[in-house]
Length: 340
Image 1 (cartoon, rainbow, N blue to C red):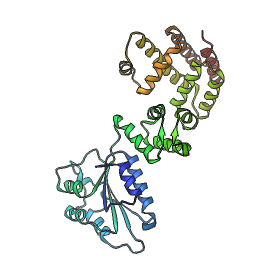
Image 2 (image 1 turned 30 degrees about the vertical axis):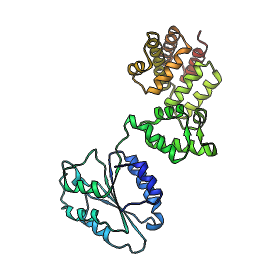
Image 3 (image 1 turned 45 degrees about the horizontal axis):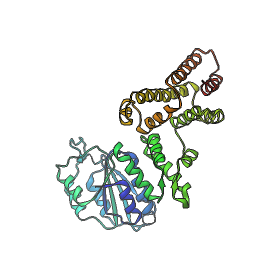
Image 4 (image 1 turned 60 degrees about the vertical axis):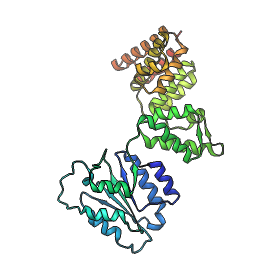
């Protein structure tokens, strides 16, 4: 079975197969594949592609369409969605699917048609004859969600596509920021690759300047500004966060989480815990924990405890309405930076 990036690279080289089956629940991968094959076949199909729901149309009717010569275009592109007859427990439907016709077709497909069968399921029933034939005779594309252990490999494939290299810090930051949103992750990598241009290399500084960071990412930068006692940068970052529509109370919660991680890392480090054990104790992304350990060197335990206390008191004042929120947060930044 091919992964999505491998399949797309072949499509871009015009190595297009007659029948594909996309297997898996990651909609982003499905959309990515569909977009790539539509773009590559655009001139041949003239944007005239067909999408058929197999819960509403019998598969033999799809085969008839696939075997019918195109009238106005050079080629046909058909997407056949939701083949429930491949599931372990086939869903009841009034349709009578003639699977023998599909079995015949996948072994001898029409050369003027590209048929893409989309099975958005965790698994299919491999015991069925049609499943075995699809596995043997068509190009199967893995569209299952990426496992955490495989994410870095997928990111490297994207880097290879754009012929750029990334600092290890960049890859770790992107992974921690966008691991749950593959669409945003790829878009950020594309943007950074475009910026790299002829240099073909992306640094951590490039990334901080260019990436459309999430709120958590901005919170990390704000923590850095506080730890460096840089009031100017802290206020600039805060104003940028305000433009994202984040309320100061929500930002205090994020900062509190970051400083608690730093305090916990400091205490565990003092107890002699190695990084791997600290990462298992602090329930956060490994890169975020690594940063927390590094940042913990800037303060003593009692200073970090005072910072958390300041955050807690400011949060209480805001919630009780004792002080206007923006003013309270700006005063909090001043107190954190000037804490002795």
